[in-house]
Length: 172
Image (cartoon, rainbow, N blue to C red; front, side):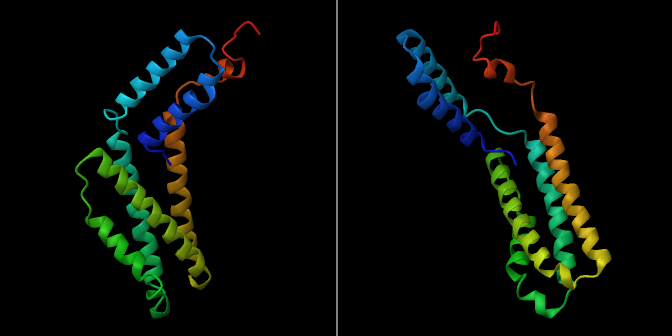
């Protein structure tokens, strides 16, 4: 799962203020770090996640939710009461049409929370399902979560781990 832009910027700023700045003795360098923090503070209002990635994730999650709903819905009346909130929430999310990147991010978060509930309900009911149906839904869940992980790995940029581990001193 991707962290919100706000959470990412807040984490960077907190690290700079609580970890980096106390270790800097030069007032000039400290001022430069505060300037970077101010730039980050101003930038966060102009940066959004790529909407195409969020929309793709929401669409895939909705598909998995529909499959979980169908599997649970076929189990009979004893399960219907337990999944009533799940079905209602799923219908609300299907009707949602986000107008902005922030709304799309909120929709993605809501679909992920509903996916967690769907997984919980599925795991509670899986013992009463036909083996083929249970394996089909398990496969869909594994595939969905694997696709998100692979996508996130593809988005990673080359790291600065070597510089981080050496404190920026390449001579060591």
